[in-house]
Every structure is written in structure tokens, then in C-alpha cells.
Image (tube, rainbow, N blue to C red; front, side, top):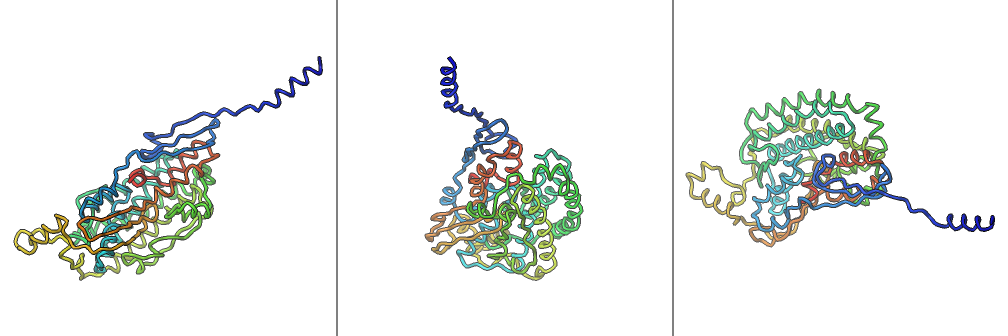
Length: 406
């Protein structure tokens, strides 16, 4: 009898019990995802065992649309990628076409672009970092800082009439000089934002609860970040000091002195702190641009076959009317060629790979969207972490659905 029991026990021990997992559908329309994308999570209680991302919910075929649009009508498409910093997208596209056509802008126009791009960077980082605070349960910082984004949007509105999707500037420069009131608003922002940013920093940067929630949350090593082709704040947080503004300067960035903040562990806290310090650096760049901008220069290049003439000339001058008609109808003379141009977007290297066959539209155009590239690392970054940490990791990566799914 005892022998029989021993055989039964041995047989039971040979049978390996399979662990039971639950499946959780995070997204695509969940407030915590901050956009329309999905992660199907395989959960062991609250621990994430596996994640399967799904993208493409708001894919709008921008690259294919661009192949059917004249060059100056592609700018509004770029607005809809990272809509938290639209002017950087606009300027990046304009510079790509200018590179193809061999157009050099006056220094004044280049410095004005730098001012706008750095304001856009502040706006982008401001939103990202305040939302990280919200996702840790700290709503106060968000309420303190968010009004400053509206002040940046007021500046956009003065310049181009739009606030979120800006379609700002043109290929070849700016359509007109900025009003004196706009320069006053920029100066006021530079003078007053540091106090608000310091208040925000005091609320979160050394807050024990915030630090406990973000340190060692979603870390990524420098090696893994490079293997996934990370760029921007997410790469710099891992300790790699790569910044397009320094490695491949554009729009006269070589004229400006600024530091590149880097982290150590590549976790959520480092990503937060890198963006914090980048806002301070952006303020310094804007101050230098205001101080050193050439006063008596035009705000656009002399390229009448590409740049729309002023409306008063179109109404009164036949040559201007002809140029206006040709440009609007997409008959601008664009050389054959193949160029790649990148700018330092809010989320990293935003690149435009353009092939022209000399026609009225691009033969091929590819947008290098940093979100689309670094989001591929997300399942690996959250594996083994708790669900609440996965939400924080996503916030700190600043995944923007419009840029993910262009």
C-alpha cells in the first residue's frame, strides 16, 4: 500500500503545472496611453510578462499624399506629426527643400527660425514633463505650468494665425517681419518663464514620492538605446550626448553656446530631468538669438520662383501675378536630386528623405519619425515591471500618436 502511494506521488510531481496569465488590453483609446495606440499585455497579477504593441490606428498615408502635392502644400502634413512642436516639423521640411534647391537664408531668418524652434521645444517638453507628474498622481505641477504653453501659442498666433497645427513660415523664409508686439511677447516669455519653471522643478525634482515612482522605472541602457536607434532626450537620458543641433548644425546653430544634458541610467527620472534641463538651455538659446539677431536684413531669401510674392504686388504687378500662379499651381522649378535633412525635434532626430525627379511633386518622400523608431523598444522596457510603471514609462518616452502613425 505504501509503495502504491509513493508511485502516485512521483507521478504527480512529474506533471508541471502551467502558470495562468491574464490578458489586459491597454488602449487603443485609453486616457493613460495619451494617444491612439494599443498594447496587449500578458499579465501575471500586476506584473507584465509580455507586451504586444499595435500601431497604425491613425495612419494617414502622409508619405503617399506628399507624392501628389506641390512642395509648398506639404507643410500642413508635417503639422500633424508631433503636434506638440509643429514649428520644428515645418522648419525641418522647409530646410529639406532649401537644401535640394541650394537656397541660403539670410541670418535674420535663420535666427528667427531658431527662436521658434526652441519655443516649440519648450512647449513639447513642458507638456511631456507635466503629464509625467500627472501620471504619478501630482496634478498641481501640470496646472502651474500649462498656462505657459498658451503663451507660446499666443506667439504662434501672432506670427501665422494658428496655434496648434501652425503651418508657420515658408520655403525660403518668412512671409513678413514679425510685429513689434510679438517680439515683446517673446521677451516677456523669456523673462518670466524661468520663475514658473523653477516652481515646477521645486514641486517635483526632489519630491520623494515622485523620485520613488520614477527612479529605476523603465530603464534602458545606452547600448540597447543605440541598438534601437534612439535619438533625442530618450537617448541622452541613457548617457549618449547625441544632438543633431551640434553634430550636424543647421539654421546657424553653430553660432549658439549651449550644453547637452545627459543622464546615466536611462530611466523615467533621467528622461524627466533631461527635458527639464533642455528647457533651461532653450531659454539661453532664445536669449542669444534675440541679442545677436541681425537688425537690417530681409526675412526671406531672394527666390521669386519659389517664394510667394506679397499680395499687394500680386494685385498690381503682372510679373508677381505670374510667379504667384506658377507657385500655387506647383510649377516651381525644383532640381532633380536626392537629399536627407534632419533637425533635432522634440522627440529626437526628425529627418526628411526626399527624392526629386524634377517634377511638380516629390518622386519619393520619407519622414523619419523618432516616435515610430523608439516605440519598438517599449515592450522590452516594461517587461517585468508593474502596470503602473508601464504607464509612467510610456509618458516619459513621450510617444505622440500623430508622429507614430504618419
